[in-house]
Image (tube, rainbow, N blue to C red; front, side, top):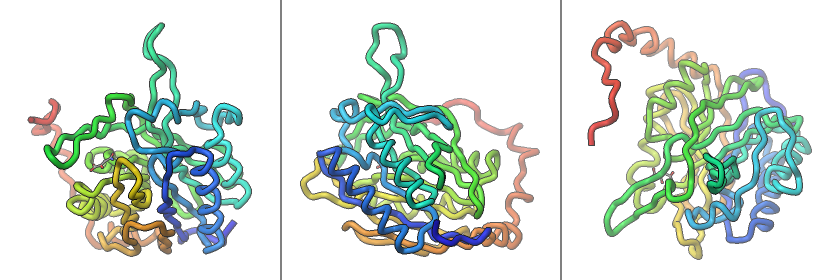
Amino acid sequence: MAAASDSSCKVALCQMTVVEDKATNIAHAREMVKRAVDSGAALVVLPEVFNGPYDTTKFASFAEPVPEVGGAVDEAASPTLAMLAATAKEHGVFLVGGSVAELGQPASEGAAPAVFNTCTVWSPAGELIAKHRKMHLFDIDVPGRITFKESDSLTAGSGLAAFDTPFGRVGVGICYDLRFPQLSALLRHKEDCSVLVFPGAFNTTTGPAHWELLLRARALDNQVFVCACSPARNPDAGYQAYGHSMVVDPWGAVVATTEHDEAIVLADMNVPRAAEVRTNIPISKQVRTDLYTDVEWKGPGRA
Ligand SMILES: NC(=O)CC(=O)C(=O)O
């Protein structure tokens, strides 16, 4: 395992090119993780849906069963997860395995199996230590630019996922989850995370407008490190990923990023910096939770 003190950690975001062929993607992810570890990373992150195309008509055919936290991988049924477990163990790193389409149980008897967009996290011993099912599905319609409806083929998750490391507690969300400040706030305040990791795949419409803004906002309003890993742009793909994988510090500054081509983004995270920023600007202590319960809106968002 790459040297990591108790407080600082080198993170690597593997902005990999994803193609139509699952076996090629699995082999390529394994090779990029190795390169990241060779660069000194102790925490390695892969992109959203890294083992196949980001395409609602194809999620089901790429889906694999995902065990519960602590469970064993069925190597024949879940070759992507088998690779993640083995690679984390081989290199002794924490591996945030981007996301894969997860083959779940049918919602009712006779129904098709539910499919989730699921991030798995692997310990340096190769154990599954966290699992997050994308909580907010990416259903948008920007006429003439992009229409995407994950809910055509995916089911939303409902739980929080976080894990402990020697350098601090890390929370996980996936892509569109970034747009909901409530989830990041829960990871920060309920789960006590100092680092948030988001495998994500914004696109050439929403990426330039919102990606950096959202990552910096989540870092600043929670005073945490935010690490977001995208696929590289593949000109042959139906969905054009934005790229620009990025690490933002608790002050809201971008500390490492790239363009849209394949790359490994590396950053040193001095995790105690999060506590320092919270002392400098103590919004967690100044927050008026005594008032919000009286005035809080508990209904759905207004259209
Ligand atoms: N792909 C996503 O889940 C989200 C996205 O592209 C966006 O919010 O924009």
